[in-house]
Figure 1 (cartoon, helix red, strand yellow):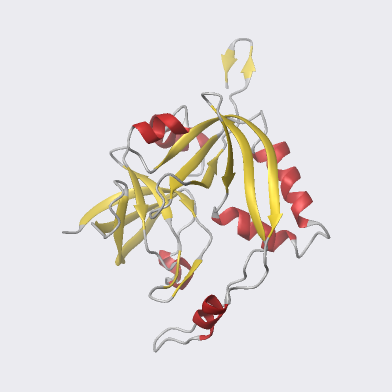
Figure 2 (cartoon, one colour; figure 1 turned 30 degrees about the horizontal axis):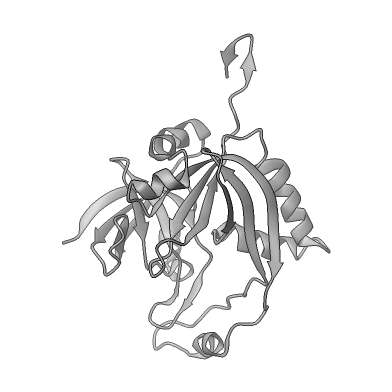
Length: 249
């Protein structure tokens, strides 16, 4: 039975080709009760404009149980989806996200969670491993196939496996594959402006978005089939509070 919830969207993954759903984007967020939700499948680029949401938009949507048995997973009723507002400031975003954070990935797993923020002690390296720039034959065939009602939009394959080598709050090191929407879209944008877009991305993340001047959390989510395998699905990096004369501001 569908239940309507209000959800702050905190992460979106880069689109994946789907024969059944055209393409899918896994979306994560937090409801009014502080509970995490994984919304899947969502053909985000194919939604009408008023339903297309961004990170930190607030959605109202009816959710149903799906085949995915992970505790946070829900099937979104697309027809019910509505963007109601957006959180612009870090202070309000913190009030939603911080209470749900774990100090380590081990603590998150021990709590039986499959999607949650994990505290980052330090990012050691931004890694971009080259991979094929071409879709597999099966994926290419899916892209060529039409739909009776929907024309497929071009979807560029990102020719890199982006990763972070990082240390969580308990001091354990990880080498996590980043599948967040922002990585693919940033590469697509930067390649139009810079001769070495990966170098610019590395500088942006290491010296700004994941630098020591931010209170950093990684949104970690596991694979439905291989549930001990976790991906970096998004980044939450508000600036650390400034201190002046003993006052935080």
